[in-house]
Length: 364
Image (cartoon, rainbow, N blue to C red; front, side):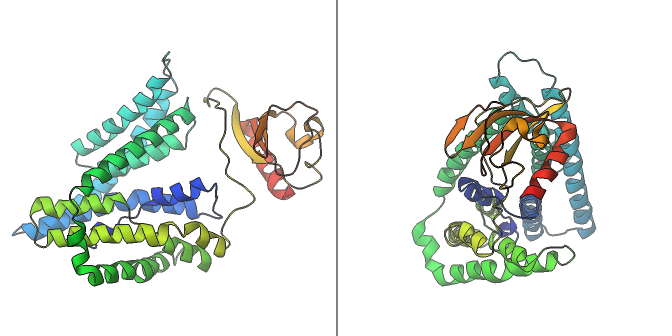
């Protein structure tokens, strides 16, 4: 049961934060992404291994250790390699129908998983790493691809929870209410904080950051799916394990999920200087194009505030595509006067991006 509930769901955290247009200070976001991507394959491996240990009469622990190193190593390597291959291919495809780019990336995910599994690697880790590689590179129709996968993810979750709901009997779950609640509270208030504070000792995270990371260890759909593995294998007490895990997931979502923005504000980890904005336009980033599109917020400084675009030296050579002021978007001209808090979308030379980011940070 410990292996099953070890997996956390960063997607749920980012969904809550993204819905509120919140950005977190420091390196918490990439850390949660790394945790979520690495602990799903780990939970799958541990669950299957422990079921094997329970059911098997003889087991070689050396062989299990070797199998773990192989699965994770191959999964990581295949994810990096095939992720780069997807980026290379998609930026060189000349498909007249835009919607087929989404289909290509979707099919690529199946290919990454299947090809990695064929050589006994971790398909889960490979798909996650490949997705991270694709998501952090400039690809054509990137915004549309992201939108497509958002929709697919929601459809998959709806189908998954409806299917899993058929295995749940509320009357059975509440028969051991005190035990289930005790386990859930220990996971939230003791096990997760201990794990976070111990594992982050070598790293430069503040106490507040560690407290927030401890609080956002939400359990999602993966533990519920893993809880079906003992049922399928006929492990003793499998139904009790499934009921406890389901209760833990529900408790985690109800107790921790709604409070994430409140805890973030209370710990003062909300990043107010670089707000998240959703772009109404799309620009295809290609390797052979020297410009990239960036989003920026106009700082409250004399260099930018109440100045016309053409008179701001830092923006020379930049093409301002749109300005968002309040809830209104408009296309500016050189004489447009910028106001503090305006959201700008600009095409900027790749060589100028770091320089412009530095100027904006200094001006804030």
